[in-house]
Amino acid sequence: MLNRRFLRIKAFQTLYALSREEQPNVAQYRKKLFEGLDKTYELFVFILSFPEAFLDFLESELEGQKAKYIPAPEQIELLERIMANKVLVQIASDLALKDAQKKLKVNWSQSADVLRGFWNEIKDKNWVVKYAHNKENTYAHDKEFTTTLFEIIFADEDLFFTYIEERYLNWDDDQVLILTTLQRLLKDLKPTQMGFLPQKHKDEEEDLKFLKDLFDRYNQDEAEITELITVRTKNWDEDRIALVDMILMKMALCELLYFPYIPVKVSINEYLELAKLYSTPQSHSFINGILDKTQFELKKLNKIEKLGRGLVD
Image (cartoon, rainbow, N blue to C red):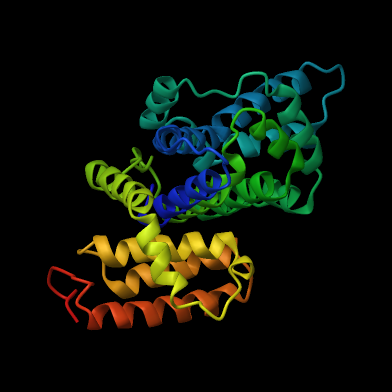
């Protein structure tokens, strides 16, 4: 789940915060960086636990509706239809997810008011009513409904944003990764598939080593790397170069110089993508120009050494 781009993003966010401190404590920020990875995964498990909380809420609503002196048949039909949604039930009953919830102490306690507010907001919407009346009770239709449900909740609902932000301070930083991972999971989900919860790391040892080396090398050799940029931006007033752009360029140069198994083009392209997310529209071409010129000159000086098949130019 925590791919290399996300690790670069977390390193960038930490280095940016560190650079704004008057008396930075590198060790403290380094510790926060690695602790943040655990909170990201916990947040994903929390988000994926929504179907269970939602189905439990709908069950209580159904019981209340049936207990009324004059029940509303259309509301009972709607509730029963959604509670039978194969994808929601599949996610809510997954044993690996339940195990992760227990291990990480993740739950939707005290969420009844939030769930009720959301339900009142969507229950009369055309896409919900249409789903309830659809006689084609297929897995594909259930998946489409579930995907829309998640999109509405975590992309458009201010109610849920407030609820999540109160519990996870990293929501603002991590929501893009969380939601894209969720979207991919739903797209690939198959009927009767269990154990679909992605691992936190594909290769935890390699991932943590990459993140550690990137953060440590940046701080250890920052002066030398900054000089590589400074001599190639003499015509630029230092104050005109955005702090974000400087950090991204220095991170990229760390990879070019000290990560022999990562191709030059991969490193440059990754930080250009980060520039699109965190900097100005003009930053992409500026960063690209500086990095391309620097890597060309460093290669001529034999300062860039890449190892492995397909990495040597």
